[in-house]
Length: 145
Image (cartoon, rainbow, N blue to C red; front, side):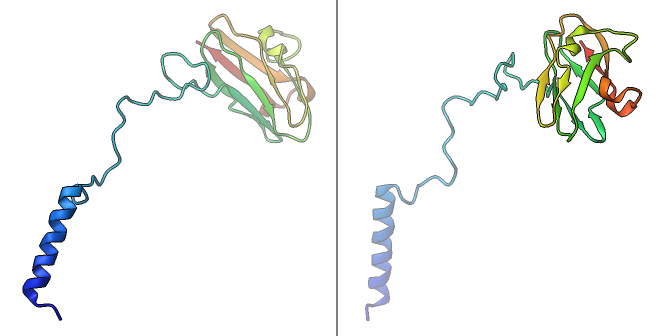
């Protein structure tokens, strides 16, 4: 059995060799990249920011969100998760049409998504569902700023 002095000498030698190889000085954190990773832009955002979600989801319970704020120059997607089709139009009802951009989304079958036209003017556009006239759960507003 080796003596305590021999074991101590072997331990010191191992530490010296490890230090010479850089093992004892190995970093405990991940290296820092030389340049920062740019933020996600969502495929077409401006200024390195993530654009807001410009989607109105339709379910059997109604539309969500009922009020959506978007920037001028944007489109809105109507995503139909309901088992029934929906038919969106600008205005509070068919007698008072407004915002023809919403009419471009129009008929949205179950499981499909349709986009509005581009909103080029700051204003508030109301919309309704022709298939469910008078059902407030299928009405809403798009605020263009």
